Structure formats: C-alpha cells, structure tokens
Image (cartoon, rainbow, N blue to C red):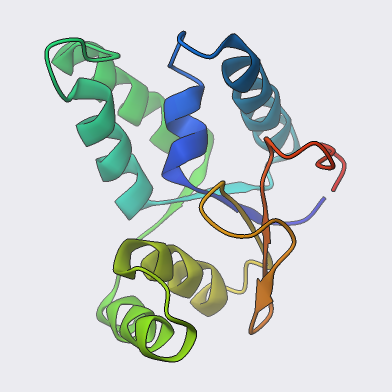
Length: 146
C-alpha cells in the first residue's frame, strides 16, 4: 500500500452503528492505514467529521466525544492543512473535471501533496485524475491490500 488520503465518509462510517458492515470495513481500513502509517487526513476531513458526527438530534457522537475523536484521529494520522494553493487547485478541479467543490478539495489535497490514492465512496471506483486514483473501500472489488 502507499500513502492514502482518507475521505470523511470513511471516518463517519467507522462511528455509525446503523450499517454494521460498512462500520466494520471502515474500522478495518483505518486500522490498517494507521498500523502501516500510510494514512493521511486533510484538516477539511477532520472538520467535516466533527460536523457530521454531531449534527441533528440523533447525532452519532456528543460534542465532547466528537472532539475527542478528532483529537485521536489527528494524533493517529498525518494531517494536511488546507492552503490557498489547494483552494485554487480545487477550483480548477471543479472547472476542468466537474467535481463538486468539497470533493475537488480532497482531490487537490492529494494531488498537491503527492498522495496517489484517495479512499472515498464519492468517486467512481478506480477512476484516476491527474495521478490521483480513487478507491471505494466499500466496493465489492476493494481489498485492503490495494
């Protein structure tokens, strides 16, 4: 395996008991990426995770637990900042590849940090854009050794 950027949906599924199969897969993937020290996070994903995990009356986590999880994730994985260059590159991804902006920012973070793989369910499995390949860890053909 190689350096891999982890999208927010993987973090959320690891804390969501409503789909046990996805939760188990997300935990398996995160554990492997932590053990191999190949997982990377964007500060964007940490923020999105906190928002999603604490949203609504039936939130996944309390504010305190979500903050603790963000802290643990930041300690467990190298975290990349969102820079002005990433924002500019993301805007190019929207224009040239028709990505939604937040997805484009994930792509731009990976591209500008030379991370060749993004794990996400938000892109077509196996698609590649300018040296960044997208893998869906919930797809039937995904293996943790990809």
